[in-house]
Amino acid sequence: MSQARRRYTPEYKDEAVKLVIDSGRPVSAIAKDLGINEGTLGSWVATWRRSHQGEEEPLSMSDRARLKELEKENRELRMEREFLSKATAFFAQRHQ
Image (cartoon, rainbow, N blue to C red; front, side, top):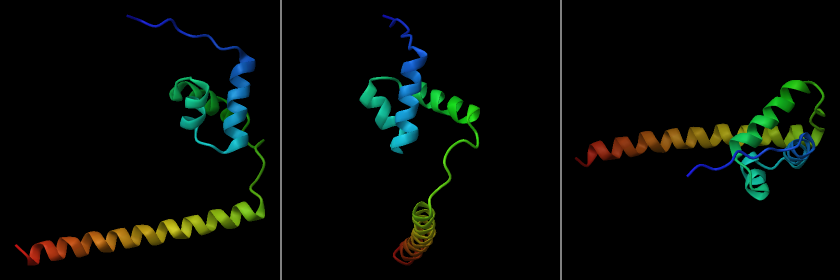
């Protein structure tokens, strides 16, 4: 049983892409809300980004600061995970 391929108007595609770009929400969440395939919406967004390179607004100072905080937190969490992984392996060997 095959499904008919849905056709979307250029206006619909533009609005869906705008939702992703403006909201900052994940493509998967917006695709689910709209009832369309995540891959389809992701493709539309990728196409839009390629054709509009350099047109997206640069990050604000607060966004840059938040990004830096998140990158630092990410590094710290990776180091903690690596440490715990090594500690688990060490203690697992001692108790064999």
